[in-house]
Length: 177
Length: 177
Image 1 (cartoon, chains in turn purple, brown):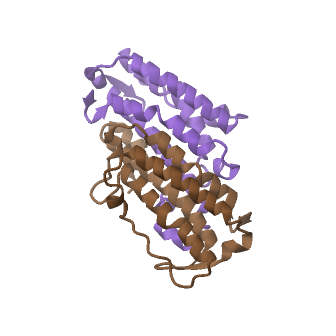
Image 2: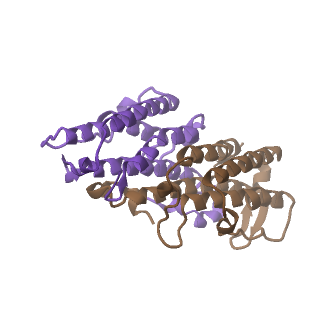
Image 3: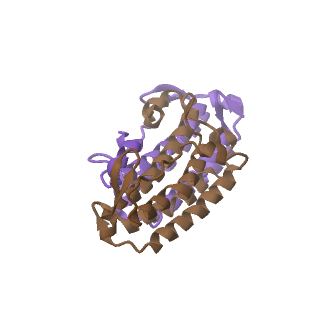
């Protein structure tokens, strides 16, 4: 099912791989990497996993159901700092396991919706962005995953900004953000 | 061993995780993702894996040995387009398996060097950048991995630039490069 550039099977293929890819990258890594940030007000890899968990719990599937239910009121706003309280006291490994479990459930719920091409045009109201479609929501879910994979890579790369010396001129990730 | 911000154990922790993380992300993905680029002259995830393989074969360990041997001539220049011929006819899965195998060997060779802190200050001559140290080479290896993880995430995210509709304003990865 391909629709305005979006394809449900392709989207699911990314969504179901993100947790395993992040676990392979992060499980057992020294704290240097896990707690690194890009400076004040930016997120560590640990923070990002908490944010992805909060998305599984309150954002993607909830909003897809909201649209399919034909709700006319806007989506609930998404809390972008929930992870700072919700992750408290949990190890990175626990968070990654939780993310993997919630994502499996989310993908199962998504597939259980048995969406047809015309469903992807169904509309919802975003509290800030206004009218959006189900297809846009699902495409955003995929891009959001990849955005945070990129953020984790960038945040960890910057730990060695100085250590890489003259080579830093070739390493463009060090100059992003 | 911590030295100018570089720590060998921390570096190895990233180097040994990159292949599994990329395999978890990419194995079995539809072609849409694997062959996507950011436009003319940019690389697909498939191209990137070939580039990482070429680095294992000709760059990192080779240059580390060059430095430790006390060579005064510059390193061989690195061929940044070798993958376009070397990957020819190979599946992504073959390339990922090769990368994983070569990286395991590279890490074993790196650990077999039994480096001491003072070795990290040993110098080599880069054909363009001039004098560099072994520590900088090894830090660059780590950042280079993460740079390409970020590149793969960004390249795939851009496939859904349009499909994500109004949400694209929140997805900053879509505006990088």
